[in-house]
Length: 187
Image (cartoon, rainbow, N blue to C red; front, side):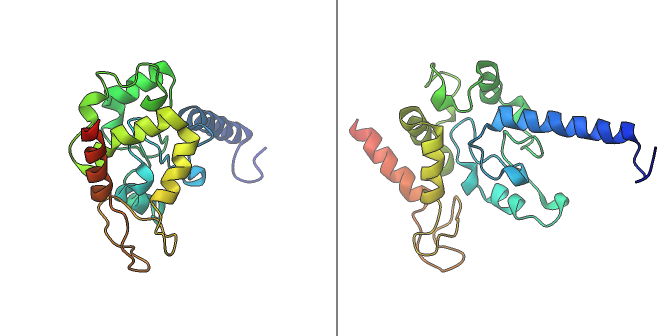
């Protein structure tokens, strides 16, 4: 029976693959994953807020699939090339945690080397501490607010100093990282 040009077997095969993919995304991304419609996950396991990553922001707004660079390390559609080899990601999968900040072993020797001295990556420690202390859902809501222009609510990303829509000065990752380093030094 082939009325639409698709056999019953083809239809059921495609439907089955879709169900498996959705189940995998729900397991990896959970209910708190933002941008479900575009298969993007804005919360990286290692503490980076991918929602402020220029590559993910461009990919979510891409008009063609060839323009999609990255939808987050937990995406089932387009993750960065390093993701399958990432030891932190592998560890989280084995321990069945969405974030290192939710792991009983945090901070461990696997994640500590990722606390680098550059703003985007250096904020991992601060962000994972927030996840540990307040929970992943709370942190995601905080990040949506933190990474939106105070004047016009347009999202902005790492490395930006002004809003691309209204031109207002934004709280940059460099400023946030400097404040975090000062607070950490105080102990």
